[in-house]
Image 1 (cartoon, rainbow, N blue to C red):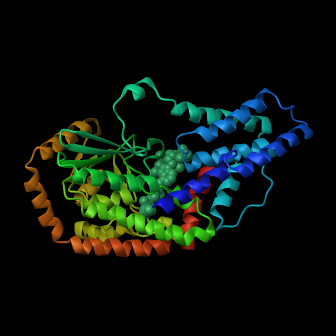
Image 2: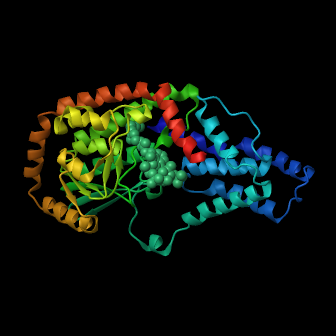
Image 3: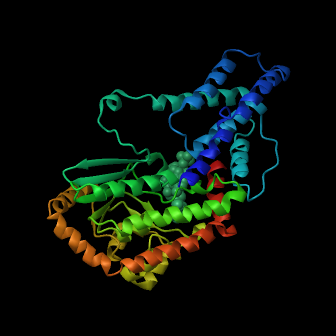
Length: 398
Ligand SMILES: CCCCCC/C=C/C(=O)SCCNC(=O)CCNC(=O)[C@H](O)C(C)(C)COP(=O)(O)OP(=O)(O)OC[C@H]1O[C@@H](n2cnc3c(N)ncnc32)[C@H](O)[C@@H]1OP(=O)(O)O
């Protein structure tokens, strides 16, 4: 995991346009060039630009990859002008994403790019300034991309990247595993709940997880991803207390498949369930290759896992993936009542009951998880997968 994270963070210096020593050294040269190419002499805007570069170094939160791409592109446009370099090859993911971001700015002027760069960095710095509520509040979770709360024996995990539809980053996989572990070990917790912030439950794996890798590091990325996914799914298979999914909106990919390992899944009628694995050149995970056919039969499972059929909440309920569907307006209240009921049941009795059920198929589940992760490792290195992920990001930066 640590190395996976390092790979992720390695993305940042090149994108920051001011973080790496090389960039800092180069910036002096570029500034001289500005004067010679006839831009205004080093003035107020340039000072603001330099200050923004410095401010970027002081951000507490690593901006996500899309924002880094924007920062990179604006920096290049501001310092070099419009993109005039050849498009990197298909396997140079990083180079291509950067090229696409830069060339996507078209021929906006260097002045305009400088202004947008300054606004963007100042915006990020402003977002980090603590508000009064945050300063005085007691939400002091050590987690960055999920939020956990504990109240009346209920441990709640909120997937908390609403601007990205709660897509799961490398860090978030790890945080969810840690949170489940906390909930497991805390004797005062009798039930755990997972839900999403904003209008989505979760948009599945963050496709940016595959974006920041040099081609020669791809095999290692795939190995690390395999191990992280194996650990993530294992945490669900072996979670010993009742685990409830509160699916507050659409769910995609791995966030759908692991629902088969929950003890109850409540969905709003606005939720949809989509596992577009083959569209992404990938394959089933979360033990869904074992659980989905068992729940809904091969024909319906294949329709979801192989042919990417997005199902409604009511269809998911008919297929046995969802326990009950509630109208969106009363969803929170209805789920709260269900969770409160489970929370006050005799905890040992519930745990023993869960263990009896899970032990019937625990070994098969672990085997399915191992096998799925092995196959996915190969998929991530395939041309089909590379092309599908490039297509997602090409659309974004088009
Ligand atoms: C350790 C690794 C384990 C991997 C396990 C294998 C897992 C497999 C899967 O989960 S496969 C499923 C992967 N997910 C997707 O393919 C979904 C991709 N996203 C979308 O199709 C759409 O974003 C959407 C349908 C979820 C929502 O569409 P829309 O309502 O039009 O919103 P936006 O597209 O504008 O999204 C807002 C914002 O969020 C970013 N985003 C959303 N989902 C993802 C994602 N999965 N990965 C990365 N980024 C995502 C999107 O790009 C927008 O960002 P922007 O505002 O443009 O910066």
